[in-house]
Length: 417
Image (cartoon, rainbow, N blue to C red; front, side, top):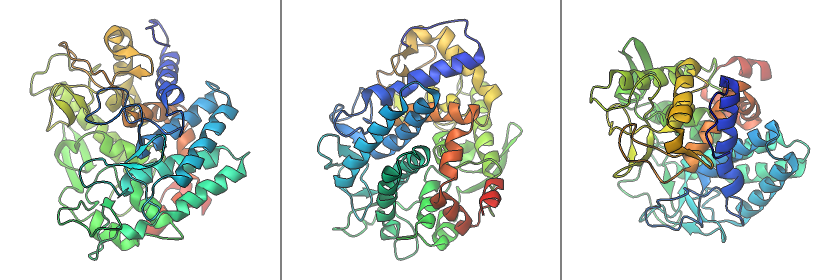
């Protein structure tokens, strides 16, 4: 899949991109655990081979479901991978059932994400659980693995991350009190699944009040301003990096999903269009930007790693930004996909799909591919094509309970009530 093949029609090209990108997880997951390695190259002070990530593994599970559904790999092969992965997680380090950001892929022992961050990471755990619940829904021929996944979910003590004021804290180590500078999960960002899954837990739930009285109560939650004619319901000025509105809806179906604060399908589309509008206006004059080359989100950067956005635009385009927008802005994303592959493929395409990021004009191309960027490309393209991952994950009782308990409504919730 490494070489560029020009002249494919749109559907064939999307399939080629998705299949190649899934190779990151199919061919480069850790051989012992089956977990996704954090990145393929360019690590910042850790071992690329043995550092595996919980959130990226959740995304990778969803990508491998797509591979099984599409026949890119035998269904039994992917199920075997899931069984190996679940067995690893059952003995890996957890903190009140909450997994850390990084684990050693061979031993299952925690690896610090940074100094002092060696406990449970509730956001990464939510992404992992999303992938696991998707696998349980997909592999119905193996009820045993589904039961084991449900046991992992039921063991997550979401409430252990509650602070006395009702805020839900991102990180926690049970042997230490919350640090004065500990990070509460608030404002519009990628962490929305924490509240949906936490509210949907029947064993250790987060109370709905934490969603309504903490998550939404920040100046950067509600937006409502117009950017180049597009009204952005939620988030910071100009929306922030695109992953803020992409990660939550890899599994949770935003179509018709509303609550007291927003229409979440409208949020996902508006965020993509606002990001694109900035790149087309290109106020900083970065060479190469345009209708076929837009998309700012967190990724590698010539100076390390950066949360690229309209308000932090370094001239770096990240392929996952536009390509993961396919479910919400397909007409706007398709020219990007074709340009990246047909015109720039000799620079940025290879095994496991596109590189993590690049400067459109210049000599910088990332050496890396990242699990959290590759996975959403596969999932986004499949949700655009068939809605498969949305149906699987949003059909799970844990997701339905959480959404309903938080006051969401959607056609698929009414149909399943």
